[in-house]
Length: 253
Length: 164
Image 1 (cartoon, rainbow over the protein chains, first blue to last red):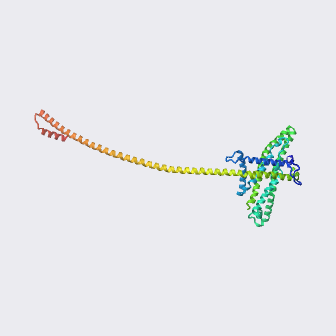
Image 2 (image 1 turned 180 degrees about the vertical axis):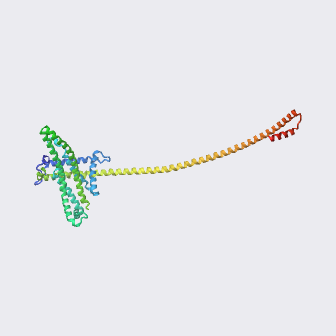
Image 3 (image 1 turned 180 degrees about the horizontal axis):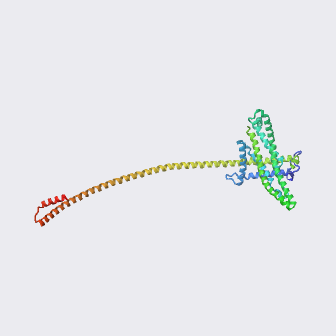
């Protein structure tokens, strides 16, 4: 579990106010690296040439992907959310992928996945949820509460249905945050467990090393590939669900 | 699980720095760069759509041009066919007239020749009669010693020749 430990890198005693510590930790460092890489990646596609190069093509594919996602789920009104959803998607994607980079091979360096902390994913989820609430109440006022009463619901079902709807609505930020955090942490823990099998098998002797270590290592390779897929999928799911929730607020039935 | 054990210790730090770096990315990338990139894509799409429309228009114009050319060409061909037909008919008529004229001339010459032949034959016949009458007189004179009048001999020859 060492890989999930937060350690101050600089300014261990920095404080925003009395008792509000803002130490620059390894987690913050990787957020910074993520922000930098996302910026560099997108900036590389800013040539704005008519016939795009490879890099510009890659960046345009990403923006087009998010643009299409919002177009499909929210409609024309979804275009104004592209900057937010794109930032969200890229930030989570790069955060997830950076955690998988085998930096541990370099002495005294450790990769850190800030998306494996629910304090970080929680902030992202609360941001998305706040946007839904703000847009919903801004556009529809108190009529936004009709979200909890699906159309064509018989009156005698109105109370139980709206209770269920309220609960499912309020659970959204938690499910959003926990899904990403759990997926990231589970993958890393699984790799850690298999790695410990390799080490333990190897140190128990040649026979056990071949019997346990080799299959575990093969499995690690396969699961590493799976983790790269999961990194993309979880970023996509976060962006997709956020856009679906925004759709609820934007196009109230 | 450090996520829970360290939560109270680093919660504010996590929230603060995430907001800082996510906010930075949102402002610089999301608000600054993404609209420009989407604009570039849209500009390119518009350009492609415009080029395609221009190409389509040019193609339609070419098609219309070709159709007009075809109509003109067909008309020209029909006119040419008409001229050829006319020339053919004229030539045929001229040939027929020449043939008829030649035929008439040939017929006339044929008739002339036939008349000449008939005249020659009748004159030859007359000569033959004369010769025959002379011969008959000579024969009679030598055989019978009688002198026959030419007129009588001639009449006798004529009678014999008429009987064949």
